[in-house]
Image 1: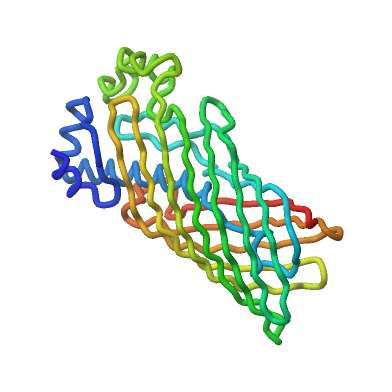
Image 2 (image 1 turned 45 degrees about the horizontal axis):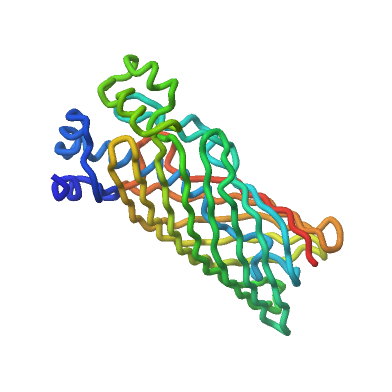
Length: 302
């Protein structure tokens, strides 16, 4: 059965465990139904992961003309729309917070014509609405100052994230399970067997990224930048409810744009946006063809 499911799901693969609901097992054995599930799960995983990816603004040597040691924090938005509904019509439990925060630190060195940067970030697993996540990573950046006033460079980073949340079903969804197309897929007794906190799913992300950057300073306090990036999304989702583990490996190209502003010496603000096209493996047809997020940062130069 695992081999059959692996062939049926091009982007998302069942790597361990066995679904307990027979209707779900029958779906995975059908290419058409399995494809719909693959797109649904792939899109849900990619939307959450894209918001939690790193996208350096103040810690990069390529996005602005500042230098020194920067300490600050950043926020990224999750999708503004409602969570996606699964094949049974149940919305996935993913709206725990409208933004994803992180603490950031970076060192940017200014040379005669080259700039170099080293950055890191992190977030401790602080519970929010029954969910928590921790992340960390490292970034290297470099840029060359051109005579034309432009700055060209690149960013390379690797981030790791682990999130815990009751994604499969909330208490309210279990209580109203008869309203869904497949109520047998929500078993209150099985949920109770998970423990006092209910069934907690674990989402893991390992995400290397490479971005090419062009930026230009407008005066002494404002820089505009644009980026083109390529990342490899390696994600796993461990579902405690039925003991299954799912994995997804897809490349994602992205475009980024934004501005870095220093209203006062040693203070830097940034605001930007990022978007990526949903490939067939992560596009269910709902929510538009793009992954997207808005990002902002505030940092102080020491």
